[in-house]
Image 1 (cartoon, helix red, strand yellow):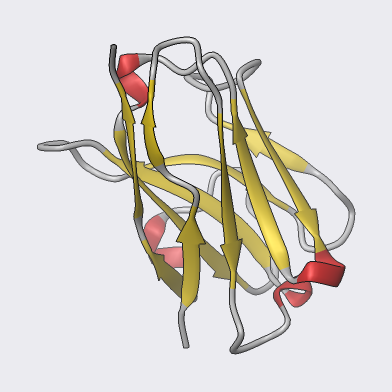
Image 2 (spheres, helix red, strand yellow):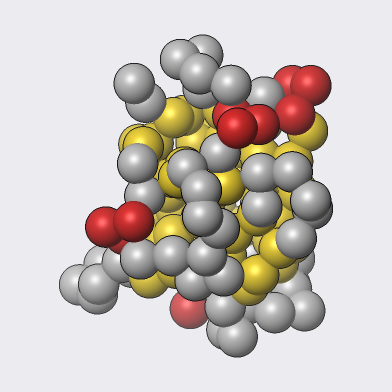
Length: 124
């Protein structure tokens, strides 16, 4: 069972990217989904998460006002819209899914399923 995260790439500072997270193994609508990132040489950190059904999202302070999380349950997909990207956003981004209960800042250990990461590089 695995999630697939895609949409990463190279973007200039101030640019935008939209990452997608999906799976063919289960119904993503039944899970809360979190986004994490890991920069080279650093620990993985939480970026944000979205409730499985009520639309609630929570974002890390470092990305508030720039990133947004949404989901399209009909497409079994969760999105991470990243705007006004900064060089410090450069990292491998991962999505992960967890069952109830929802957490506004889930830890890695709380997640049930993970996807392979997608590289985001912000550079001029």
